Length: 437
Image (tube, rainbow, N blue to C red):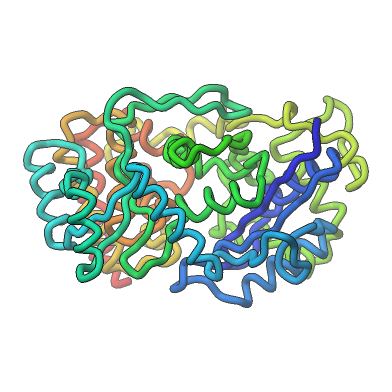
């Protein structure tokens, strides 16, 4: 391969997780193997949750593992600064270019009006989405109004046809454009959201391969559309498999810190694990060389690693015995999640109850209950509530299945069915209200 330019772009909003370490490692290995560059970039535009201590922890953990960056904080580079918050003017400039080319627009809708739009869609049993009112505002009028009125900048998603994007592990991924909302690129305070900021940075920093977690797969069509609207050459997209627990039973999460073992890099260091042991373990969670080799040094990994040997998302059961535990909720009418499972990190009982109530309301209004309809609706709700998708989805998973690990959530809801899903959400609300949390 030609020399690549790859990046690892963590958010400093919590302790450094070994799933993030695996993403960093795969990027690092490809850079070293091809004689390219590995860039560390800090995605710190979430001002409420970002904390400099977590950035320091990320850097300390990477250095301890031997994953050294060629460009980024402390070492500098030709594309400094490498913290997103310090690059806000750059994103604003690109947002203006998208407006000028007709691929973005200013939206002046108030929160009250957006709520009315959502309610009208629900009454019509339509998937909630922005109705495009401000798409029709003439450019000259919009420019004048921007001087005096609060506004956001939205991407002007094509409403006809479909978008196809190629993922290195999964092949072509196609989605109807009508299912892609006019997402906000820049908030009313002038801060760009990830959808714009990361794409601008990837382009400006010459990133050739975007190797990142599978949680970004639903956003891939939007990100490709932003690249295409800007006239840029897309990178190779590669979304990694789910990082499973050592037992193979379920996705690794921060909830496992006290149940299975520490999942934070520096926590493992404090428990006495060596860097080579951790690197060897995380490298094999999604990549294999052959059916015999079990231990690799970092130099071995650099020599033998290949993107073509990565595995896409795997099944979540290891043996048939696991099916009873994993899928029993499909056949039971009585689902009783533990109240703590209804409070994913960052949620209070009040916010969880609100999220469950709004989820029930929106899901009840949908004309179809297939996963291609329910997932976009719930992603839009997460944006509405100011939650991360993982927070809302974790809450819904616990409510619908009674478990923190399950088959894919929205396919699960489709199989469970609309009536039982709504009933389980109501039951979860009752459990939470009675739990005295």
